[in-house]
Every structure is written in structure tokens, then in C-alpha cells.
Amino acid sequence: MKSLNEKLNLLKKKLEGGGKITIAIFGLGSVGCYLLDYLVSLADPQLRLVVVGRDAEKMQQDVNIIRTAATIRRQMRSEIVVEGGCDFKDVNSIEAVLKKIQPDFIVNSSRLYAGLKYGTISWSNLRAYGIWSPMSVLLGKNIMEAYGKADCNAISINTSYSDAVIPWLKSAGMAYFDFGSGNLNHLIPRMKFFVAEKYGIDNLNDIDITLVASHFHDVVISKEGHTEGVKLLLSIKYQGEELEFNHEELYKACAIPMPTDQKRNMMNASSNFDIINGVLTAIREKKAIKIHTPGVDGHIGGYPYIIDATATDVKGYFYPNYTMEEMEQVNRNSIWCDGIENVVDGKLIYTDELLSKVKNRFDVILPKEVHISEAEKVAILLVDGIIKSNLK
Image (tube, rainbow, N blue to C red; front, side, top):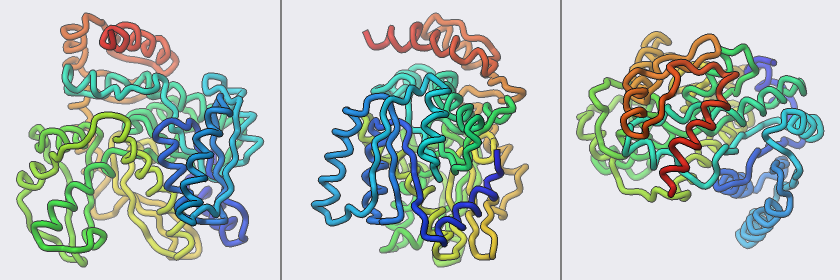
């Protein structure tokens, strides 16, 4: 597996040579459909968008409506390809597709249990999301195993609980995703709304926010307007100048009402789009662009990260104004609240508090440690013991 910097420079060479840039979307559920629509809206003839899944007929229907809508908007410039017959539970099936389409980007938007926001069960009962990690890792693990076998060089993005999933893959010595989507990208806009209103700023893009935290704090701040007593790393600047603000007032203002159904996946799709578009824009315009991403480089939690194409070689690196030690500690404090004690040596370790809550609320006994080789077994326990019983 090549390093991220090597992959960024391969992409740069292809972009500058005028070659087609292939973006593969694995799974065309609501996240995948939104993402495909956003990418088509770039009206970029250099993009080749490949949707990958089992049911070609169903995917073609979704593609048809997106193409039609984009044509009405006069934006249909990218090629779209439907690649059916791919079973995400079969590594060989995925490997064959990767070798065939030769992607430059891969987005894993697949879900083991489709059509359900797991958080609707876990938040009200456990106030933690990390319980679902064994479910989140399974299909991504298959994709990255196939990625390694196919000797793929695509820049890869995972959409499901990357705060723990990507470190879990890396700690097991497997190929792992370059980026995760979501989390901080969902929270930062809410902060911009508050700052813009407080300071009378018209253009939200002029507000520069840098935030370090895991998935838990995206949820608790967005839902309840506080940090559960955990101090986060947060910087807000306007036109290069640091703004003074009351943190508690800011967090409280972030608790704005939103739907709880699949319309929320507009945010996750937008986060994927931001990473892809950020990389392409940085290279094409020779800029340094900051993104926020969970699990980057196999680190637990969410981080600000720079794609820097200002020099001859493109490189990615962590936001330099905070030390890695500071950011890692904040993220460990944050993800502990989500029920994750650690990810190490191929094992995800739950907190004792989470295990106790799961036993008390659902009468299900989870193992303290889950090796990645046992993830499917624990995922079945979660589906049968918690999800199915709560959908009756």
C-alpha cells in the first residue's frame, strides 16, 4: 500500500496530464446518491463516476434520475458508469471490480444494516455510538483487503465511524482508508452560523474554524449544546484574526433542530464531497486546503488535516498549530465518552461503562475486547440482540 503522499502525487500527474479521474462510490444508498449528485454538480468533464454494488438495475434507476436532474440544471458533464454484480461480502468480487475500473478515489458508503440510523437506538439508551464499531468495520475491511490484493493506488475514504474503524484496520496490519468522512464537518457549520450572526459576517466562508474531537462530541454538541465536561481544541478566525467568544454560548447555539431520518446523510455525503473536491482543488489551483477528517493516518478520533499543493510535490499533514500529543489526548478523552477505551493490536476495546449499560439496557453481554477477526460474530450479536429487538 502506497503512502497518502505517493497517491496524491500520482493523482497530480494524472490531473495535469488531462487523464480521466475515476471516482468509485461503493454503495448507492442515500449517502452514495447524494454524493453522486454533488459530484455531478461540479460539471467537470474530467471526472468519471463509477457506482459499485450488487443490483445494477436499482443503481441505474438512481443514476437515471440524478442524470436527468443534472441535465435540467445544465450540469451534466461527467461520465457515469454503473458497475453491478459486486458483493461487498466477497473480497474476490471487490478485487475484480477494482482491477477493472482502476479508480483514483474510492468512497465506501456501504452499510451492513441499511435503512437504519443506529444512533436512534444507542443515543437514547447508552449516550454512545461506539457500540456499533464491529458492524461499521466489516464491509470496509473487505474493501480494503481487496484494495491490498488488487495493489490499488486510489485515495480512499470511509463513511462509517472512521474514528475507530480506520485505526482498527491499521492496528491489525491491514490496508486502511486514507480519510474518514463526517463528524467535525457536521458540527463546524453550526459554529459558523453562530459566529456569523454574532459578528455580523455575511460570507460564512470567511470564517475559519479548526476543531479537534471525535464522533461523540459531534453528537452531544449538536443534540444538547455542551461537551459533557470535556475540553476540546477549538480555534475560530475571521480574516486571519482570532475571535474571542464564550465557548459555552457557542456550543449551546449548535443544538439546532434537524431531521433524524436519512435526510441527515446530506451531511455525510457533503463531507465526502469536501474531501474529494478539496484534494482536486488543492492540486489544480496549487493551494493548501484544510479539511477535517476522522481516522486520518489511522489515528483515533477526528483531526484538522492539510492538503498542500503549493510546492512541486503534493503532501498531506496534520494541522501544525496543535501538537499530535495534544490532539491525540483530546480525541481519546472524547471517544471514551462514545464507549471506546482503545484500539490496539487489531483489537477494539470497549469501556467498562459501555459494557455495563449494554447489559442493563438490552440484557446483552458484549466482550471487553473484540479482535477484528471476531468482528462479524459480535456484529451478529448486535443485530440479533439489539437492533432486531428494538425494531419490533
